[in-house]
Length: 63
Image 1 (cartoon, one colour):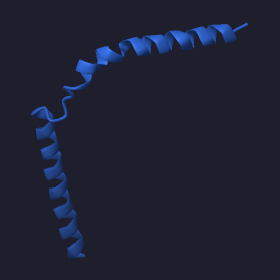
Image 2: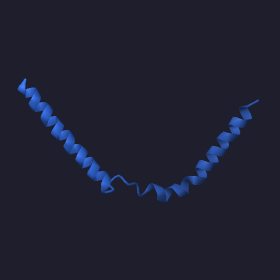
Image 3: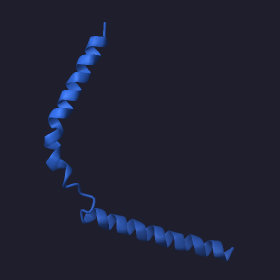
Image 4: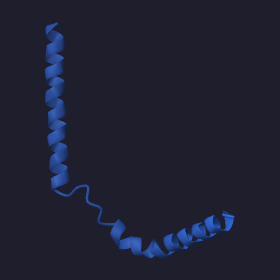
């Protein structure tokens, strides 16, 4: 039974360590996306064109 307590306590310590590492990575900006905003403007026209085509198809289907 003492082995279970030892394993649970070690797993909690490891989980807390991973959580602290995750919070630190988020605060330092590791997950910030610097690339997508710069290329999003290149694909805006395609998204607008697709949306307008879908809207036209939906309105044509309605009686």
